[in-house]
Length: 253
Image (cartoon, rainbow, N blue to C red; front, side):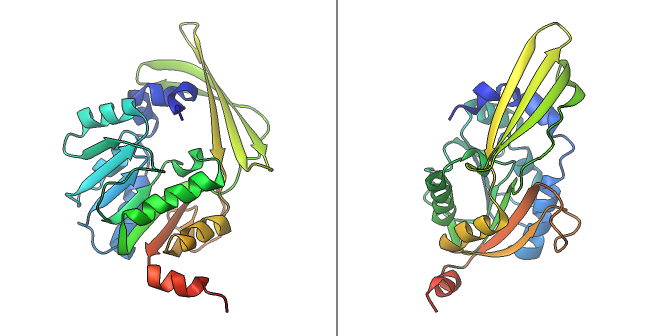
């Protein structure tokens, strides 16, 4: 799974950081840890950490571990955040032989797993690093983008000066949303992104989590409103590891 072949931001970690510099994900995660987790200073594992920007922002924790499949992103993260414990690894198979108070899977990392058995493997990894009470926070797409008209924008970041055209596609049978993005650089060159993400509908997320021993506690698309209608395509899913409780709920009535 070489995501860098299909996404310029994975080939250019500095661009990755520049495009997400105003993200509020870390702030939302810290608030969720404070509200639902065992404490703000607990251990944190970020699976699919990218450049570890969000992990580094969780400054209350002094035990922060990140894993990502892309070596270029991890190398960049190690340079930017030497205080973090960072590993190259696959969230389907990585085993660190320890548990954490909070497990993160942000930035649509789960959506790059397209097949059911791969998603189950990721949840098995979550379980392998959890103890009773561990908080799981996933940020992933729960609905496709149905806009069929191409959108156009301008990027001026990390030395990139380009007009960008984006078009979305959707395959309902496979639940794969496709993003085609073309970068027309001012120097006359062109880059093309072809990004495919598996959409996990809300009840699917809950089912995968339950079978892995997690009890769902929240699902929201608006970080300012955790109980309102789901109005966006990307959601925060929050669950707590409760193997005894979820086992009881899975038993036939």
